[in-house]
Length: 276
Image (cartoon, rainbow, N blue to C red; front, side):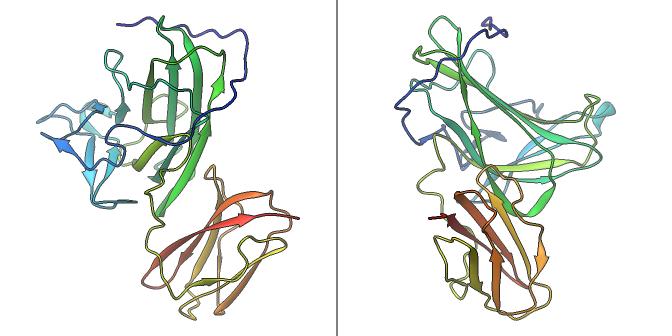
């Protein structure tokens, strides 16, 4: 087993980071004997199966689902790489990217940790993140920046995704669904899910306002907006009119995801906010 250093004393920025690298089987389309190809899980087939394919996919046919089990006191799903078989990553990318849904029980959260290392097994960069917001209606995009410690060339990357809580024991029933994991940006072949062509966005890029129309005038329409890290940018609200305007003057420049839940459809539109 490889020995890793956990203490970092300095940070050196690395320039000219390349963009977009799809991890092996990034969209979890390929499975063999109940296991996602190229990925490690803590499944024990026939006894404890915590990680399974889900047909509720962000893109393609499958995503990956990890659920906390009540077996023998409770076990949390583990997804990622074992210490002896890391992902070959030979360029330092700026971000770790993916899409998720999360159904949480109690105070559970999703914990994500990634580390690249050089040929001497010394750490080059680390990305870590905690997701505590529960959302099962739409896939939420997450972009986690790497903290870069030196200019060494990476050789491989360790990745771990699991469910936990502050006591170290997650609650049975909590689960995540994750899809399209990449480095350096969202995959170019990932399309906006469930797009309703009747929905029109009038201000994109947006400055002071985000204006759009709905295909249905229904009081149950729910509008929400997330930034590129998956953080909620506005409080979700019901839209009772077919024409909707959201003030965006206080939003920082950048990419946002407009989530529109109508009676029978879910639509996500990418919005760029740019204050001139």
